[in-house]
Amino acid sequence: MSKRPAAGPGLALALAAPVAFTFFNAGVRLVAGEMSVLGLLLARGFMGLLLAGAVSLFLRARPWSKNKKSLSLIGFAGVLSSVCSTAGFTLIPLYQAVVVLYLYPAMTVLLSAAITKEKITPGGLLGVMLSFGGCLVMVWPDGSSQGPSLQIGHLFSFMGGLLYALTFVLARRLGAENRGLEPLFFFSVFAVLGAVPLSLLSGVPLGLDGAAEVFHAGLLGLVGALAKLLVFAALRYLPPHKVGVVGTLEILGGALFSLLFFGDAFGVRSVIGGLMIIYAVFGFHRPPANDREEKSAPGIEK
Image (cartoon, rainbow, N blue to C red):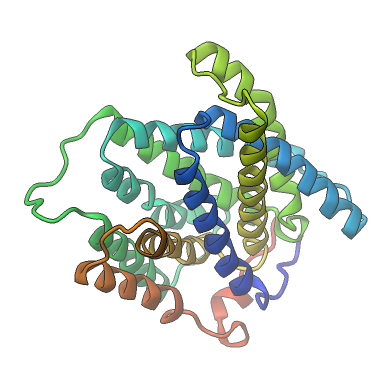
């Protein structure tokens, strides 16, 4: 049996992750014309390996545990999630891709029940629904009276969210063996191994042709790897659906970044959606000492 660590640091780690992802997303927007998604995936993998190595030296620990099969599945599913999500962004309107992708906190509820047998409280379910509703309010364009017709891009976005949710649940299943370091390491290995073959098969160039592109890719890769480390580390302490709900702050952070640095509109509906997300993140969070869900989280058979 593997004991669950106390949930104390979990919220801080979960909050830091969407902040890092917000900076990563803003950086991607700034250099979108310089490199391809596969080039960025390669950079994230390479910088993730460097970050995992540095953290390993600091903790004096190996970047893997005895549960290598689960870690390999986390790494493989994480890379596929990135590819599917990016494909969705390119095939359908961005707001639709974002809404479908951010179904992942709700997906973790079902996957958690099936894989880790964690019980989800009514408040937890309400928090998931409210956070998704906030995302929907923020990104749905004005004047849309009809829902989007289903296309292949919606399937890609859905699969991206589902695979992302699976990595959350599998990382949670590792229990105390997950320090964030181990899932990051395996994700990075699969990213490095997969980026070049995917580029050759798809005909999409990496786009890392000059020193400036390599530098920008490395910087973004480091921020993206740090975000991955934080979100995986949070799963050591908090259930996947709670980490997912907190992760929806990435949408709010992106909107604020757009307002402050890119001059994008930020209307009343964006404010309402942002408040819904903020309440979902903080309004349903109980102190760990009083949170029966955290106390009763089951150990995992090894």
